[in-house]
Length: 228
Image (tube, rainbow, N blue to C red; front, side, top):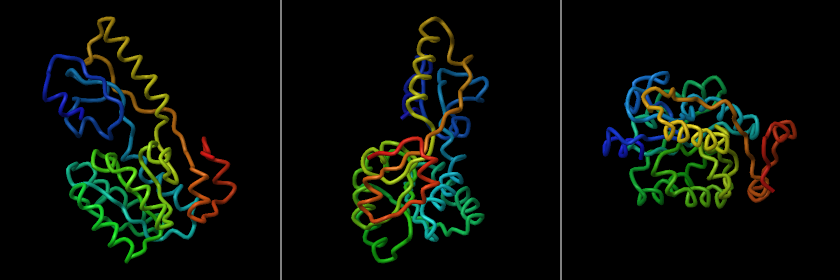
């Protein structure tokens, strides 16, 4: 979405919220000096992959095989699945099972295959395709009684089991700061891109009960928010 906006204009200021690596994506020249008409916040999605797997393992100790859903449109997501997550998984003695989803019509095929293979956990990556089909993914995980970790808070609000990542409410407040600075004459090129400083770990207790899971009390105590 940010890339489309950047392609459409080189002069109108664009404030982004989220995204993994805006430098790699070509949105900015560097975090310290964006250099163009885009600035804002990055949410460190890729960097947090290992921490998500670690929390997943602690919350559901029996997890050994994690099915990772990813869309092929984003090279960043492909890199996450093929290179970043497997490194973190090995340290936790987890096996990553990548599942490529080519489009909205492909979910049923993947879900049917997952029902046969029966992994121990589900980890949908972010991106437009996953976000647009969030309710379907959450519904499948609940119906299959499959523990799941998400990279976007909205999945857990919709019934997903767990989220770990940037505190989105804090991020949105920082967006207002950028807009204010730009309206007062600052140039996006000169406003450094910020990385999140606040993170949240959210567990949906309704889903815990629904899928018949028991999460260790010490893990529940670490959650910033428990959805009841």
